[in-house]
Amino acid sequence: MQQVDSKVRTYGLFISNRWSGSGSDGTFETLNPATEQVVGRCALASASDVDRAVMAARHAFDSGCWSGLSATQRGRVLRRAADILRERAEEFAVVETLDTGKPIFESRNIDIPASADSLEYYGSMVADTVGKNIPVGDSALDYTVREPVGVVAAIVPWNFPLVLACRKLAPALAAGNTVVIKPASWAPLTTLMMGDVFSEAGLPDGVLNIITGSGVVAGEAMLRHPAVDKLSFTGSTDVGREVIAASAQAICSCSLELGGKSPAVVLSDARLDETTEGILFGAFLNQGECCCAATRVLVDRRVHDELVERLISRTADIVVGDGMDEATRMGPLISSEHRRSVMDYIDSGIAEVGRPAIGGGIPAGFDRGYYLEPTIFDNVPVTSRIYREEVFGPVLTVTSFDSVDELISAANDTPYGLAASIWTGDAAVGQRLARRIKAGTVWVNVHNFVFAQAPYGGFKQSGVGRECGREGLEMYTEVKNVITWLGPGGFEWY
Image (cartoon, rainbow, N blue to C red; front, side, top):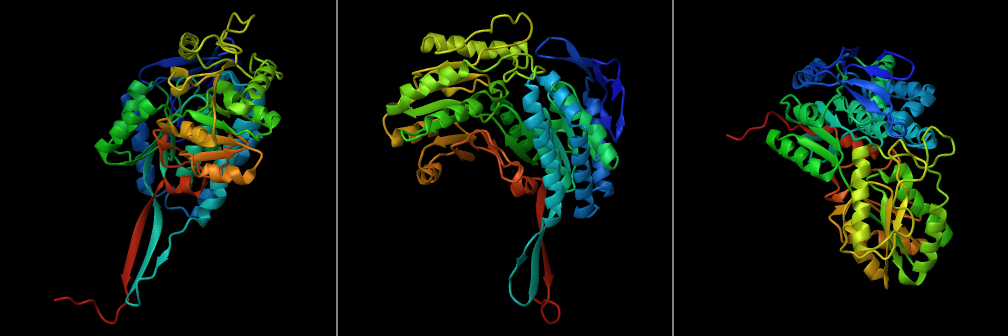
């Protein structure tokens, strides 16, 4: 990293443990969504820059400088990276807030700890990754081993930049792969900062390479590079289709964590005060810019009015403001373009449903920044756009139903299947209904909790594969079967 002044961080490309100058295509600026001021200046990588990064990763992998180390040695580097990240936690939290707009309260208490947890978890569990012996009789020994895939091209979005980067880097590196990672241009800074973290932790040259630039140029070059062995992408379902197409063309593996339209199913026996708090955390965490956000409240008609009254009352208490203000609990959206997209959905909701029960506009007094009020639409028909499409902003819909079967059917009536939550006073009922919902994660009486130790990913159009947990590590490995003849004498057939 090169620091030009105290306010603007300037980065080149991180290739083979060294910072280059600007990219071949120049530089671009990142803005603080709260103030619209420049906070970062980054290299705009060309296809030739991407080629340098991929070939550095290819050379590092083929040399065995990383994959040839023992799992214990790789784990030690990851755990050291976790320690360094924790030592620099406040610096990372401030940069994450300046780059994304999210409240510093969230950066400190969610993003940075969760990122360090991923590094530490995979650094600790990788030594326990083993194959299995397969009994095939006395004449042969048959066992499997897990080996790294090779060069991983990883692309991460802007909503949880560091969290999602570490969810890919930690298991990919733990397994012995080398990585080229591209953060989103709207929020690349903390991912770039990980270059120095891993360098200090002892990662060999070429094992981690960080590229910044446009998806059209740099992203496309990563997806199409012939030396890449695996594609890993988190983002929209539409772009996910392009990643699948590139994977099919190259016949390489891919893992995808895509969009969602997650329901919060509220039964008549739910504890409404607790349910209200949980749903609002699910809906409005990170300004609603969250793939697994609780965007559809599906509620038993008998408790509809009480729940909506509570939701409106508590939403009115949410403090919207600059993320660097300690009191802020909802910051601005990531960009002017994205706010316009969310406001288009609000306009559509007004046309189809009527005025929102609360919110729907730009908060008073915010002349700069990309702010938007937390918004709730009530009595939303299941055919409306805001009910069916992913808004990716602070917009919550409420729809009532008459029976549990109708609630579950509505929860599953979506092309997505990332997550869902069930709210009930009977934990046993929650467990039974969880089995009926088609989603990769089902929460009972909580929403938006993701742990490094547990698999996370979607059904249907919400993704392919899993991140986190042992399953997340296995996504970055190939299974090799080794068979040794033990029979008396050599095997004879002819």
